[in-house]
Length: 203
Image (cartoon, rainbow, N blue to C red; front, side, top):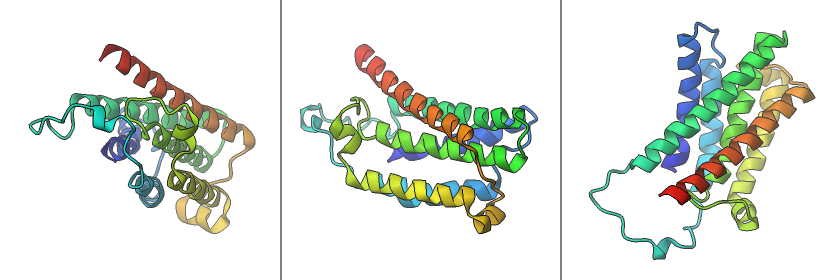
């Protein structure tokens, strides 16, 4: 739960911080951050609570009780994933702005890229070090699948429902924007899986 929640919050805060440092208009508004936190806490974060222990947990040596809760590995993963989320979501915002779309549309694309990154990272988190590129890793937790389905529905409403657009300052996205958002999500998923492989090889 820690290795999921902290990077996703880091991605949200990082977007704002980097934008301020670069003198950019904010890529996400406070009320949109509230939306992301609200729906991810209700759906994705709760799904982690129903995750079964990893198969090799009893073969691992005992954890040193003097070891800090945030080990060096967890701090690295948090920073690494936060950086990926900032890069993808802020990059999506700048890309959409370069296309000449409205500020509301660019922000909507950035928020959806952020949420897409959180969705794929939830699957990455099902195993902290082992790959999830197998049937059990992708489909083995029905609560995760339910959470993802609900979150997709929420994001469709967030993007296209007029009353929600008025509340959160969002705008409809075209298919090309969704293609870029999906590509970012897939790339992030594979990058984190590659990072796991490297960590297993050199640990």
